Image (cartoon, rainbow, N blue to C red; front, top):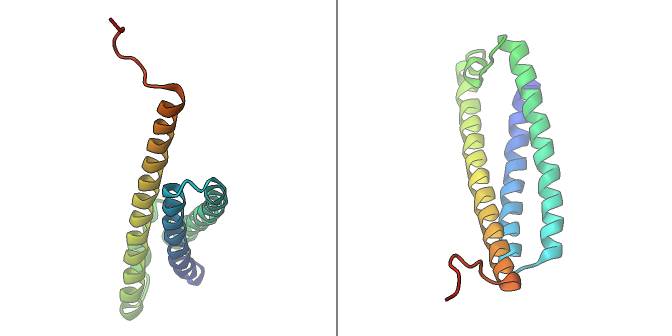
Length: 133
């Protein structure tokens, strides 16, 4: 249980870092800072790999604590009421950060895709939908 709860707190810290990196990535994309984008992409990728490993470990620990098809709600029931409230609040905060990171990642991906499309138009011209007369 201690490992699982520690992992939640570590993830909260990691998601704060991830959100900051995603904001930096957005800024670098707006400013067309290719080298900075590469550095940030590497840092984001490494952090996401760490978060995924921690998530997988959390599933293993929850399975050991509650059996097959674990859920955090089941894990919460194993805690004393005073500890349960804090852990549930921490979990809700983590879920909120996960949603914010997904939204920021989508925002950044959309921006980068749009920039790529614009650059392709500049370099190769518009695709003709109709034959010129």
